[in-house]
Image 1 (tube, one colour):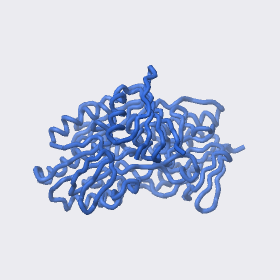
Image 2: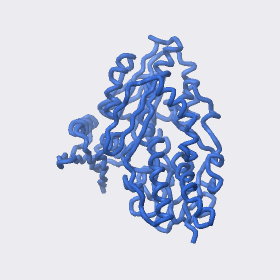
Image 3: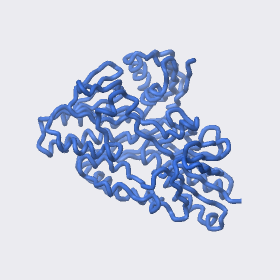
Image 4: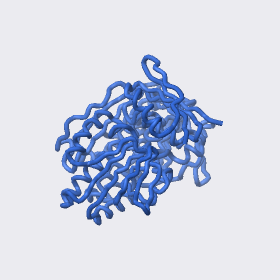
Length: 76
Length: 379
């Protein structure tokens, strides 16, 4: 059964939301989902671009006003 | 009734907490109302940032170590007995010897460890400088190096986020000073779409790398290393050849954290402001051990430890909370063999590095000596 975890990387500058996502996916198994919360506008481009490049699945991306939420499923 | 404070780990975070608390609780300790114990797994305390200088012959082994007993205040009990299970429900820690330790307050400062085994071929084929054997082996490799392709490979998560940048810049200068200019090529790989997680630092690095001729490969998350072919391949599908591979391996937390069911990959879910282990009211987490999404660095451990000292002392003495952690991190950054810069940030203030100067480099060198005052809780 797949799991979902949330990484709240709002208002953090280093290592930042994408690095936290990468670390969380490293600790996950195929099929698991990671939700990343980010207040960094750069995440709008960074996270979907990296997800596509590696071949994971961007399940959702949501603008929640003061932050963004992305759900990524580990595909390999 | 005596208040028992148990600190797991004798690294920087645990040591600062212990030494800070012993001063704040001096009268309670003198009267027997409070007791502080550090439970560690090694009698030696290492100044980890000093490892960066070892490959370049700029630090000696004996400079990096002191006996933990001499760093800790004599009123603190130090027990060398590796923790094997942490029971935050029953307020008890079990150790390798079979002993168990009850506590009223717990500070978990078990740190992080290198995990090159997470990437096939990395441990066998790559050099690293994040522990002493690795740093000394890299020093020997650099002594023998006559030229070729060097890959400085960064993996996530890792501690000391600026160390890979420092390694690339210092390596470039070190090899040029040895007369190897034009005979080597450095390629720096990084997991995300810019050269560093800290955007201002990444922006500064672009022209600096161009000026020095250091190449880079972004979006590079290491999948495997082939030691026979001397290549390193990323999950993104890129392959780089190398003659000398220097990696910053992925890290994970202490085994005891995973064995105790406290956190995936050894990182303990921690409130970013109170620094309390989620679901507890008397177990603090400091340093690399937390899962807080900020830098795993000595300064983070230091500022977190100061917060825990304030809160634990206030809880013991007055039964109330003192203050929250504001996310403060401060970093020195060596930008070559003779210049350096620095930056700080917290949860609300973004980082802004200053222009590199020789003065900051000298201050970093001075801090390498002053570190022991920090560990003693004096700085």
